[in-house]
Length: 85
Image (cartoon, rainbow, N blue to C red; front, side, top):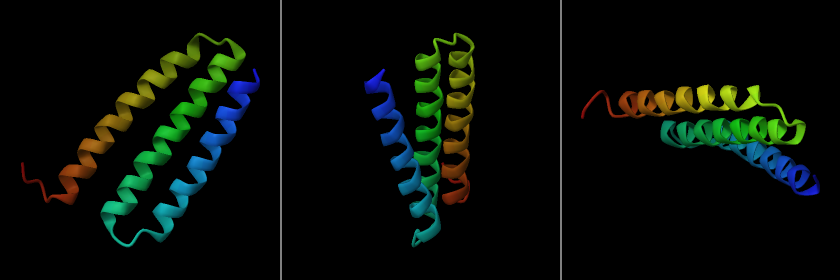
């Protein structure tokens, strides 16, 4: 359980750094990378919370959140490139 707690704290620190990147990012690309990093950190914290509480439904939430994050990444990439392929 100590390892999970340490991982949760580290994910929290990563989330704070991602928020800093979103706020201070010099351009839109940096802000998108920060948003993606924040999404990964939040999904990791949800997964770690599920492992800590031995909840089986948490993994369904993580799966859906991961799929939504992937679609958001594709959408951000299309928006940044102006829709070019």
